[in-house]
Image 1 (cartoon, one colour):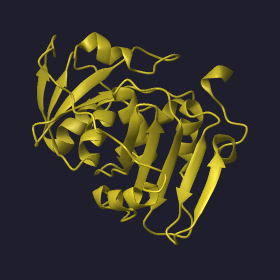
Image 2 (cartoon, rainbow, N blue to C red; image 1 turned 180 degrees about the vertical axis):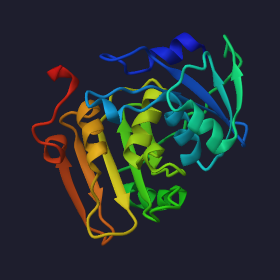
Image 3 (cartoon, rainbow, N blue to C red; image 1 turned 120 degrees about the vertical axis):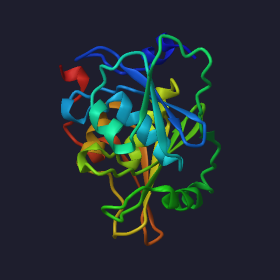
Length: 231
């Protein structure tokens, strides 16, 4: 891996420069994060947020930040939240990033989503959510992550999507999500905006806590949406 490749995986078409970083977890695995902008700028995902949530959603704990520069959004928060060691380095040729692509058949989707609910980090809401992002290269998992500052966590859908971009995957087939509680499984407003940007006209499967399933498309989630093509 090198910084040029990782930076090139950022999605920064309108507002700013690409950003990327790597987090070393307590397990010894390396997790990448890249900046993912949105036409609704407040829901842009900074690189360090993506990397830390990537790490946390796989049951690991961030211990060290590896970056090419210190100019990262939300840097102070994440350094304090996990007391991260910082390494600024021009080369990451020696680093092998951890990529967790799995195979999940349609019949296995519900079972896999239910098992993923135990990986959610939801100490504040106690509302676990899991997501599976189906891509031509494999399936990417996501669970919701909550930290001490509510607005710096990420929902399961955005964890899966940000992990895909860090892997260099930008072609998607569909997404499936599951909640542990509640009557109806459905993405929040921020997720709908991000999904409309990157999974335009894609199918979504909602596995509800009562065991039922409903299928929808992006336009159902956010009709009349505002996207980068509008800018």
